[in-house]
Length: 445
Ligand code: P61
Image: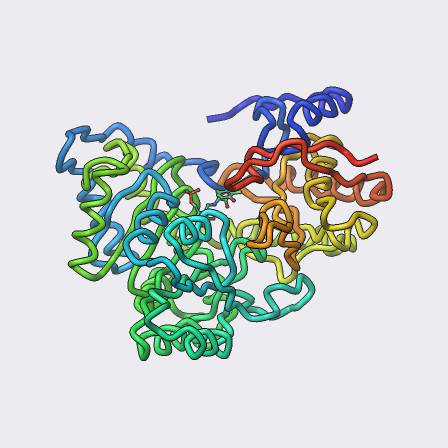
């Protein structure tokens, strides 16, 4: 399938950006030339997946597509039970409500927006236990997703294990650039957690991408298949939340996976309240079929190599030109370092937000802020001012060509050359939850 692209003039894009309140989430997609907002639900499905859509069994209960999905999940990831959901945050909501009590601490290898919000809404407090290198865009550590075991141990000593229901481990950590966790580190995390009766919840949204990096960089894994590595990663975790809109190459879908029978029953009891019956959880039968096929396709080596290779291509191009980016380049996008790109803009005037807006005005390329706006306000009511102030150029899977990447790189260079002219932004509307999605801004004169 092809889709015509429309190229607006610079003046038209300037007007679109003003109307969107300087927030790329509020642009209309018809006004975007190359859409690197996200890799979530934006990948292209294969011929096999489209064929799967024709096999939808839309029975209310017990659809055969559900059983195909369950079998595919067990084959690739190895968890025992699958509770389907319409997307990842629904699984996060359920597991947070089921396991977190008011006053609990929930450690994790860097926050993710929706994950942390659901932990907070359940009464918990997120505690960052990722290694310091993850917060440094210039550190070349190959596994910036690793947990600092001393930080985790300190939290256990200070709070007591009974106040820590689980540690949340993301693979291919989104907020620091799509950075992998090593299998060796994860195994140690699992052993430490289990010595204290703490569960390990795996945000496996981009686990396959993480497995590819393990194969490429971690000693001892070069000859293992992607599926073998994914299975080993999952074996050091107890529960998984999944947004299938990423690795699984579908436009919508997700699930919660658990090994414990009793917890599975509780989650099934909850899914009927919020999502739908436990054999569809918000997805249609045809969605589940395309998803089952996507699970098997995404672990094919040629696919994942090409996917990560395209991201690395854009990263290298920008790095060669001296553009400040997060290094090493991760797996789902290239992240511009707005603090070094726009050093003249204070972080409370949202340099990454301003940079994403400027890039769109320059060329129609849509990206996403991942900095002070995304981080939100802390308990003291102040902007969190995270160490990482980034703009994410996220690459959908199987959609764009290398030529598109070249256009993106050209535009970034152009904006870099004129960076002194970019101004900071201030809020004109700030929503209470996940403010970055719907916030509006105006330039500060
Ligand atoms: C994304 F700006 N990610 O990266 P759902 N865990 C992880 C995700 O990456 C993720 C979810 C859980 C998106 C969409 C999105 O702040 C934002 O299926 C590691 O989106 O519910 C989603 O899965 C949630 C964009 C989400 C954002 C939150 O573009």
